[in-house]
Image (cartoon, rainbow, N blue to C red; front, side, top):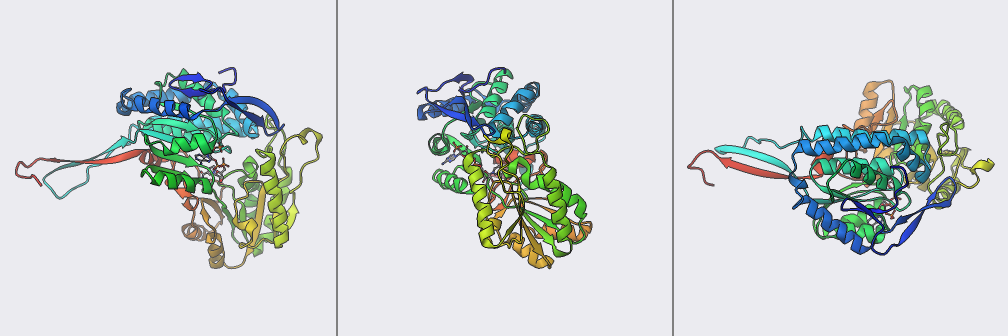
Length: 488
Ligand code: NAP
């Protein structure tokens, strides 16, 4: 990888697509056209799906030995590491995220390929103890052609979290990146090509979700759709998948709580929580955007949180010191600003931030100083709706049971944190919170080895760990009779 690749990756080759049409990709820190990327036509999608189908069946990918697949996955992991700086720079320029974050995410992508290279050798069927004279075996078999659709906030990491388990399990993959951020997915294709991944096992197809993405969902040869994005898009994909009973995994929106109890280490919670909501400029499905704070520690928490937020360096993505980059688009910044105004109209106060920085070197980008809203009540729209920008809502509470009811009074249930030095309290609250990924006395519980996914409208199914291999396989049951008289 040295020049930026912008073409479709179909059947092992980069090509501009049948119409030659392209769409423009910008850098959020400058808002200027950076590169033009190939836009797939429906004919290109058809060619990619037929190629993936052939690679799975005739090409034999579906029946390759686990250790052969593991070899390709390790090759991709190594290739990602060899190209880490280039991939991280692409990601930072394309998403606007700080280069330090991008380096971490690209390396985490490599670790996902390594993890599934190992995991596939221990993932298999069972021998259920059936009440019959014989041996019952279950097999885990690949689904076939699967579509993976990813959003723009963690483009490379989300792509790796889907592609690695899908191909480890023996499927062939159609990957659709978001139109804002197609470059690192095309970079992943380049790494896969260098690792000699067989033709058709990974197809990377850029183009609009409504047409290209839709065709990758509706096609009869696609047996599974693994989608990460907005809840409304997920619902539409679920309806379309229902028409052909396709398998689905959905990773959707969030409005996650950060619960600061009366016996929390408040100094630690306050000083570390800003990045749990403002990291990636708040464009994180797991953002802890509702802080439920016990009234006895409210002032200490809010003051400490604002102090730490003031120290966050808002700046250019490629500057090593930057901790908060621009939002992805002018529209995404506008949405955040409108929510801050709405919160004030609903009765909340801006205790810090929410303004556009006036530094001349940031003038062209979609920058916004992170906002802390206090005096928020849980039923306000600003506390219920996913903003996907750097806005924290602080909601004070007195009574634990009432607080838990409020935490759960939300359509989402993805993540959350609980801060308490009283472990019984922490576990009691963790068990009661409706959310798929909770952390106690820290800000994240996302690990390659552990399940990740949401309750309620935050999604269906789990990624990561062996759960992702389950999600990309079918279970087959086979009974072998050992008693010649047994024929039922
Ligand atoms: P989005 O608008 O739903 O788009 C996500 C992806 O779906 C993009 O690749 C998009 O393509 C494609 N798409 C759009 N409409 C489609 C359709 N009708 N058929 C097939 N594909 C379609 O979401 P986003 O704005 O990119 O991402 C932000 C959302 O993702 C937030 O709600 C966030 O919470 C959620 N998210 C969830 C998780 C999680 O793990 N739970 C992780 C990260 C983000 P185009 O770009 O071409 O429109």
